[in-house]
Length: 306
Figure 1 (tube, rainbow, N blue to C red):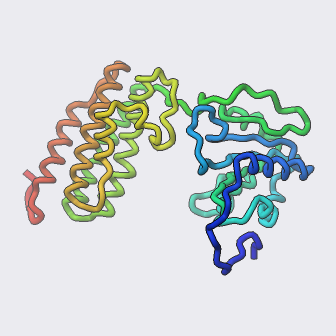
Figure 2 (tube, rainbow, N blue to C red):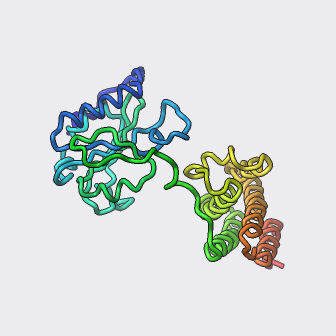
Figure 3 (cartoon, rainbow, N blue to C red):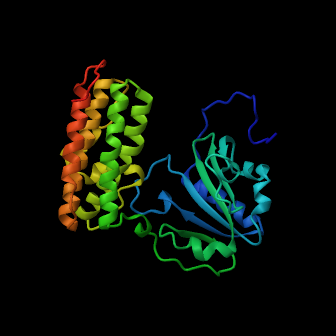
């Protein structure tokens, strides 16, 4: 049994959160004490000068080691020096989602005090590939061989302008999958309808909104993973419309959410098309939208659509 877990012992959550400085001191002291670890790199939001600061930010850390990272994979006790674990995930040991196959050691560790470290352990040979992440800060370089790095920035995370095919594919997927939602709602198959709405249709909407924000900001700002900063960049009316796309388990409100998605997608896609010189598939939009309205109006025992 991994002693870091103390299975079966009830936990008290009245644990003092270790400060950012305490965590950095710990991360570096572990690295300095281990001759295998030659360098420490910080990635993620704590390396991002533009990211909002709060007490729940993860510590995304890379240890670069001499030789193979394989010995770390089999040694979970080694991880206990970072604190008392709440829960641990080892993505390279999991079947779903499948591991990358790199044979690197990756620990995603949530500790009882609220801190989280996403720690990746890579051989030094991978540094030329890893340093391309623009959010990289070199915290320790024992051999003085890796730096200097440019100041961290969001270049690797900025939206990129779409080409005509990417735009057309996004529009086609959005309008193609929307009837799946309508059929699921009419059949009162809520889990299926919600899945189609919130996974597939929404993915295309968010992609189109990222392109719109990119155009409006010269592709110089990061809208955030899964749109977490959209509120800062969308016009107020569009933000309000986006909020209407999030529905509960009520069938009528899910129909409303689907209609709101269509309205918002149409606005964003027409904006992108105009600025990029693309053709918006207005015919597909009109035909599918009419179909959605017809399905919503169908009685539950209908035998014909039209």
